[in-house]
Length: 228
Image (cartoon, rainbow, N blue to C red):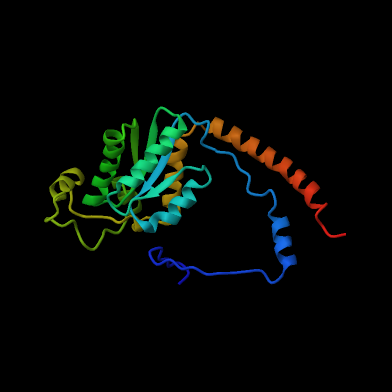
């Protein structure tokens, strides 16, 4: 049961503290924690990740958070606000090119929405973007011997003929057919392929050094906050 998630049905819970001392202890314990650098700031290219459906949210988060690469969920063909925000992040980055890493089903809609994402950013928003679709690919289907979807592509779909011509079959595969850890590794590999790893590792070393200095400062300050 712990493996099941449903982000479409949000819940809200409320909490509190038992007493003032508990709050002070927590505030002191978290004081000057959470510092980090923008690990993409000095990179030569802006990188984003785009997923087709809500079920990919945690997988994309696991893949992207180490590198601080932004990601978006389209829930199928994406809406204008998402591309507007992606375009705004690219403009703020001050970089010359973007790489969009795409995760989608191997079916008529999944292939077309990947192409549509690139067209939208390039033609509507004027972004020089390179697309990189990392899943589900024909190579992965063969390599992992993935189980096909029970339902082949519908010949009533307007994209059916183009899909069959492109893939050579009407068989379809959902992203969920891929093992989650495998998919995380595929996304990370695509991210690293578009990073200058020397710049990235140097910045991580600087961040670690700065966090050590912060720890010294935190210890110095919090020692004076303890009750005598």
